[in-house]
Amino acid sequence: MHLLAQTAVITLAVVNARIWTGDARRPWADALAVAGDRVAAIGSSAEIKKLAPASARVIDAHGAMVTPGFTDAHVHFLDGGFALQSVKLRDARTKAEFIQRITAFAKTVPAGAWILNGDWDHENWGGELPRKEWIDSVTPNHPVWINRLDGHMSLANSAALKAAGVTKDVKEVTGGTIVRTSTGEPTGIFKDNAADIIWRHVPPPSELLKDRALDAAMTYVAEQGVTAVHNMGTWDDLAVFRRARAAGKLRTRIDAYVPISSWKRLADEVQAKGRGDDWLRIGGLKGFVDGSIGSHTALMLEPFTDNPTDKGLMVNTPEHLYEWTSAADKAGLQVAVHAIGDRAIRMQLDIFARVAKEDGPRDRRFRIEHAQHPTFTDITRFGTVGVIASMQPYHAIDDGRFVERVIGHERGKSTYAFKAMLDAKAPLAFGSDWFVAPPLPLVGIYAAVTRRTLDDKNPGGWYPEQKITVEQALRAYTTGGAYAGFAEKDRGVLAKGMLADFVMIDKDLTTVAPETLRDAKVLLTVVGGKAVFERK
Image (cartoon, rainbow, N blue to C red):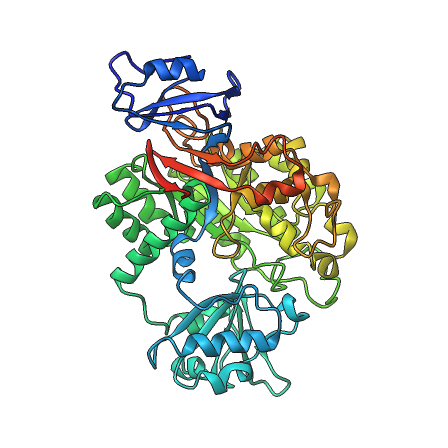
């Protein structure tokens, strides 16, 4: 047992718990005490009870599990908050259900208001892409611009196309695709960079709506045991976070990443204002190499199995990515780059290796976001180059329903290769990619441990050789996320002096049957020593 300071006043204690600390020096304990926003002591229930004054709140866990708070290392936080308040299409199973939900939602919003988000998945009804004609008749008074769940393609209805001035003559966009009919007419589907044609005409939400989206997002992730997120977003997002931080309203710790092309602005901000505090940090940049596998825009070395003429697309050129990465690294900034296809991953690993060699040794912690379809050769390079694999296990059990059809069985062997990454000594950080996938760490742990696809067609696991243990998955959501954000001195483990961010779960994840992991429930989430969620 270690006491933070002899004068520290303990305000909260948890006793009779099964505490997985994440600390190699003391992996397990059964009680902890909090003073202010830090862990004051870890020890036995008897010891902690003696330390707690009458004024302290003492929680009897009755044997429930306690872990460090989960870090979701890849979210689009405001988008997730807005999606909570928009039309829900993720689980629409048929074309008819897709249309019916949009019809019903349109009746709830004023005429002229844009209908956004949605998170539809055309794989649910056999793979046919939706078209504007599906919904034009039920949304004549609303521009509709709804995204596929991966965010790499969206559907516009005729009202949205009209608002954007889009006609048959609209020109193609580098790094994007406009899906057209045989006569050249846009179907309403725009992929990756082509989506900017519509986005630039979507009116921005008010500050009030942004603040509400942030509040909704913080409430939702607290219910899932998430205490910190890495937001892959924009300068506008950062402004919302800063407004909440100034007002003392943040309940989720946020590491805010901004577009890699704005590296100079970020460097100037860091130099002038520093990197932030325990609640809001800056210093990271997010870039893109390619799109997604579900949209057939992931950049591949060989053609897609189900479309032999297509190898995906490149969102940014290697020249630009090298230029931005090199400049950012010289400025002491962290670089995280979205790369999904095997060619995209290889390209960015090459850039990272080149920049590291040119600039010399430094604790730079380059990240590849998603890292979904690398070759086994390139998985080894994650370890040798020291690149963090920032991965989302829910994607494995979601995409596993269709990926083999898209890239074949052989390439599938190194898909979402969690175990191979760990075997290669690659730093591993887990997240969700919310809004793309739900921010549910307990389901993410289930996904990484069982690899049972959402359709339950792989009860033994989809490519089961890539399963990892519960403890490995827990580390990816705790110490891994903290390391990926340069926060391991304050977050990720429960030990004396660390931030008092923790979650209580109704069952011991390390002892239950793996197939029941997704049924576990968060009972309590604490951030900075204060409960931000308690299950009634």
